[in-house]
Amino acid sequence: MTQAPALTFRALSEMLLLAAIWGASFLSIKLALDELPVLTLVAHRVVWATLILWAYVLIRGLPVPRAPRVWGALIVMGLLNNAIPFALMAWGQQYIETGLTSIFNAGTAVFGVLVAAAVFADERLTTRRLAGVLIAFAGVAVAIGLEALAQFDIRSAAQLAVLLGALSYAVAAAWARKHLSGLPPQIAAMGMLTGSSLILLPLAYVVDGGITLPHTTQGIGAVAYFAVLGTALAYLLYYRVLAVAGSGNAMLVTLMIPPVAITLGWLVLDERLAPSVFVGFGLLAVGLLLLNPPAALVRALGRPRAADPSS
Image (tube, rainbow, N blue to C red; front, side):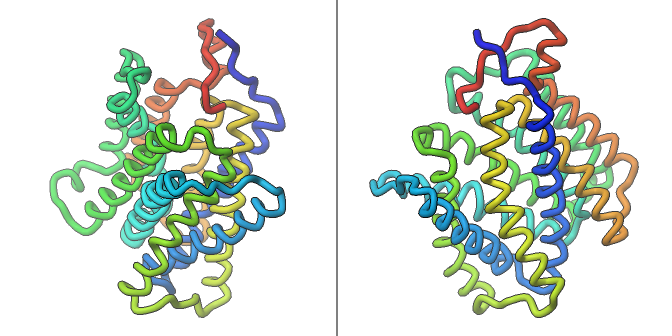
């Protein structure tokens, strides 16, 4: 067994930067929703990010795949990892707080464990992982609130939509492992965004009656932020963090995002979350740490850990 990568100061700094970028993305999406329909917003997000990543790939001279089978897998990845979750979460954000959306988004890691256990023979659900799943789901239930569980309204539907988006992310991760494991991560990101652009452009045009642009400086800035920084550059930074810190440490980014989103939602939008939401996030954090403990925690517990194949 090889030791997991150490969490260096540089890696931690890049993780904090990534969490800040993604945490602020939830605010930028909320602001853009004041001016754009959901599908048009998501189309802007993936199309501009696609152009940036194509430029990156061409400038770096990275090999672009040519096989139809690979592009078919990339289009499915674009559907599962971009089109479906981006649209569901953006729709949900119309009716729930920015910070709450980011907390439910963190449930991706929980769903990921369950999907992987169902699909891959080497991802069995151990006692520790089962405990982590149960604690994390308890946290989600507490964050949703008893009143939302008792009666189904538009807010309940929005929370369900965000959780379904997180589930789609988890299915996408399994799809990527099964069909895209041989591709360089930058090519995979470019390819899946290309696929989601091919899906969302015509869909937004038909459903929204055309592709419109934001009409204020705030709206233009919000779109530019979540497309350029929150999607294109964030993907490149994420793969760098994954390579340097390993997946166990990189998972900590998931827990760093909600505090950023909650704080920005409070400062900019005057959003207020119920105390139960913070309790739920605490339980979710405990569950996630049980599911995928970072290297420092593993060493503290004195247990060796095999290197993650994706790191």
